[in-house]
Every structure is written in C-alpha cells, then in structure tokens.
Amino acid sequence: MPDFDSLFNAFVTILVTIDPPGLAPLFLAVTASMNRAQRKQVSIRASIIGFTILALFAVAGTAILSVFGITLAAFRVAGGFLLFFIAFEMVFEKRNDRKEKISDTAITRDHIHNIAAFPLAIPLIAGPGAISATVLLSDSFQGLAGQLAFVGIIFLCLAVTYLTFLLAERMDRILGQTGRSILTRLLGVILAALAVQFVADGVKTLITG
View 1 (cartoon, helix red, strand yellow):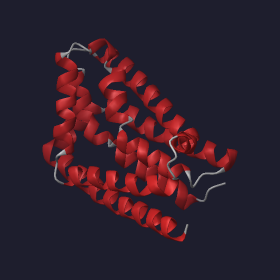
View 2 (tube, rainbow, N blue to C red):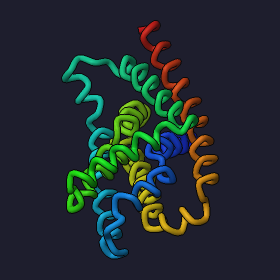
View 3 (tube, one colour):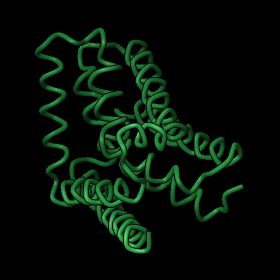
View 4 (tube, helix red, strand yellow):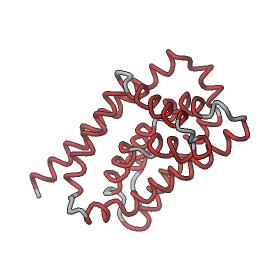
C-alpha cells in the first residue's frame, strides 16, 4: 500500500493540473444558457467522463506507452516539461486565455448538448497535462492495492471538480478576479516545482538505465 506522502503528492499533482478553480468561470461560460438543473447534469456527466479517461491511463498508461515503444523515464521527462509549460501559463495567466478560446469555439459550433464531453471533460478536465501527470504517477502505484488507491485519488480529484462546478456561481462571487488570479498563480508555482521533480527523476533513470 502506498504511503501517505505518495498519495498526497498524487492528489496535489492531479488536482493542480485539472485546476478546478480555473475551470469554474469557464463552466459558467459554456453553460450560460442552462438552468441550475441542467448545469448539475452537465457537471455530473463531465466529471464521470473525465474520471473514466484518467482512470484508464492510471491503470493502463504504461501498457499504452509500451505499444509505441516509449519508456516511462522518457515520458516522465517529456511530461515534466509539459507540466512545467502548463505551470508557466498558470503563473502568467496564459492558460485561462487558451481555455476561454476553447470554450468560445464550443459555443459557436453549437455543442451545447454535448458540452459535458467537449470541452469540459476533454480537454479542460482530462487534458494533456492531467493525462501526463496520471501516467507519470502510475509508476509509483504498483500492484492491485496501489492501483486501487491511485484510482481512488483520481476519484477524489474529480469529486472536488464536481463540487467546484456546483459551487461555481458562489465561488466566482467570493473569489472575484483578484482571488482567482492569486489562487491560479499559487497553484502554478506548486505545479512548476513538481514538474522539475518529474524531469529530474526521469533524467536520473535514463542515465542510470
């Protein structure tokens, strides 16, 4: 069974890459024409789809990589750089701009009925960053007990995301633009440190291996 530090590190990493506070205003934007009941249905469906995708990569991510002949160490380095790029965008507020463009595209193309799948579940919840983090972390959770624990961590992260969607209107009023900006930057700094650790571990494995 993984120790508490491994579980906590996985929880923080995945939660930060999903970035529920950053998704809250986008959730409100893409569901602007919906009532509260419809928003609840969308939030449930998006969370379930996002969980399914990330759980799949948590359990079979290494096998998927092996099909393409990619080692976990190489993916760890590449994924670390990708996570660092996401962290850079978060710190300098470029990520929300990109997400807003995605959400605007979805609305103009009349994807309202499928909004839970696109763009909420993919690529806003289970995007490249979250998938990369999931595959990278899966190496630390071996065996049935480890995999179940990791899937449980992903479930908790998606539960937090679901609750964020439900409380999106209230949170948006409480945090305001300044609060969201501060929180996003703080999470970005944390993610940057975790990304550097991923790269360092990957390079070490490549050199020794």
